[in-house]
Length: 132
Image (cartoon, rainbow, N blue to C red; front, top):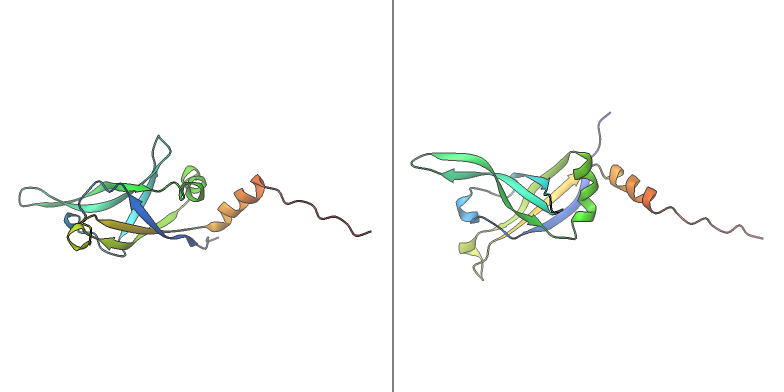
């Protein structure tokens, strides 16, 4: 049986960018990955172009982190190892940004029924009173 993936997060900003975006070779629509760090933060990784001496190598590199609002939505799926489709949906390199700070956003898609099932188990519905 195939699972249907639906949008979990339409657009989430990647904070604490650790690399200059203009040097990465990333573009909108590129694939990214999410990894759970030991400190509980969700790190965003992507395959970026690294320049060596006359050679461009592509490596999986940590770009930054998702904000704390994304953690409750994505932690169950990351801990369980569910498939998440992560794509770059917004990209403003440093040299194009008005304030000189790069901006990056991603979207996350996955099987939302697994996440809803966890939420329903955590908070059972209150019973309705029977009419007299």
